[in-house]
Length: 147
Image 1 (cartoon, rainbow, N blue to C red):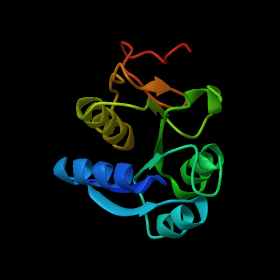
Image 2 (image 1 turned 45 degrees about the vertical axis):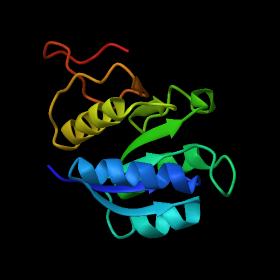
Image 3 (image 1 turned 90 degrees about the vertical axis):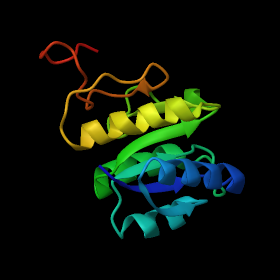
């Protein structure tokens, strides 16, 4: 199912590459934003999935932005970063971290997982995705996951 995706990335070439890849997967890229203010403005128009870098044009604001997008906008948030240590593994809003650099296959698998979560389906997270918090339902034989 097509999702409305917000890309939050201050490196324009990376943002454009992500946008093309997501559109090829059949998703609608609602916008690319380079900082928190832009991202929140676009999110008000409705967003399903947000791909958020940690270090943006306005500084290392990605972790707080991701929490806000998940909590206040209902977005399924995936951090895309070369600095995964900047995010607390106890973060309860965003789903996980896809470390940079990543392959197109890893991105596609991560998006399929995010769509499954949005649709309330149990799914196995892709190997490259580092899960955060305790909110993501994952496939584990019908039991609640023990994290």
